[in-house]
Image (cartoon, rainbow, N blue to C red):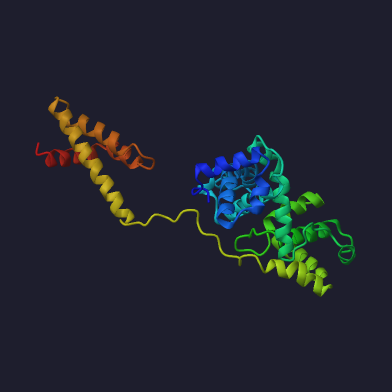
Length: 314
């Protein structure tokens, strides 16, 4: 949808909007023409939706990667973005009945009502309460406990949203923070929150038909919990780590021999040339204290110098 709309479609949509004919044209259009109208409105609407709805939402959800751009959105976040854009498009094709000189400006004022209405409609389609509120009977079952009553509302909200909690059925991390806000107590352990969720669900099940319609049914539309995939798979190690280390040392040795030979050719003594180069080349990484120790031992240094001269055939 984002890449298939022709510029002429967008220009046509803007012209119809300026003339106050957009909604009427959409209502009377045959499928091919309606598809072009939808595509034109979509092209105008999606940048607004991403900038004003999707990006702030992803920041609140701490999805810094998703907030970077469309190509970075995770699958469920991308689905939600497209749902929001579709909601704005549908709203525009129904409500744009008067002259609109600035289509982007008009759409910007319609983003919130369009997406909220669509969100409530989608909740209703799967049986979730459109505006979750705590029934009086459930409040009584929970003894009027402020936190348990709040948790009940959180559960009713959660079952109606398409988001998942990774490998978990419930977003317990978020509810842990919410509990601390409501009660003023330190965040509880996992067992405590599990017990409280179970208690609220048990209270809801005292009305089996209500529970089946407004909790079980919408919950059944969620994707089954799955373990999260790593953000990036580790690189395949084609060479063993010790072979990598050996190759590094061989490269350093070749570099050291060339430097020592240059110093010897310039008249520097073998002892000075070897000790300076070895300290510089092999002693520059953390954990290389053994180099300094070896060079400080006259007998070991003489052995190193003799070996180097033999390799260089000096």
